[in-house]
Length: 166
Image (cartoon, rainbow, N blue to C red; front, side, top):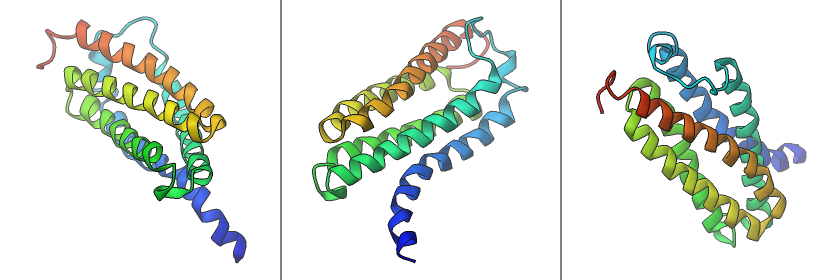
């Protein structure tokens, strides 16, 4: 029983990002063929089938990194307060992007939102580094993939201005 008490915290931290990813996936699946496939998209975009597994790995990594910061930084009221606040806000921004882009077709606002998300994640990496260097390194692939997603969002926005309303 004691092991269950001790393991619920890392499990909760690790799996929490998956909740938003799962919900966001509903918006994506619903709009992929009927809307997204009709857009002008760059040839360098990753194939659609890559997004779900990559995001799953990234969500698990960022969740575990947040747990490492929580543990190393004395919880929500210790040195980890700012990093975990940034982490929580980037998680909300991350979760908001899929409905904004796929459900509401707001390409301009999706681009603006993802730029804010990118800045927030960079801030997470910097503040995580001060608490737990390994946790900050775990977040770097997320920032890399987010950089690709930001470029892709910008490209889709600029190449589809006549097809959609801003």
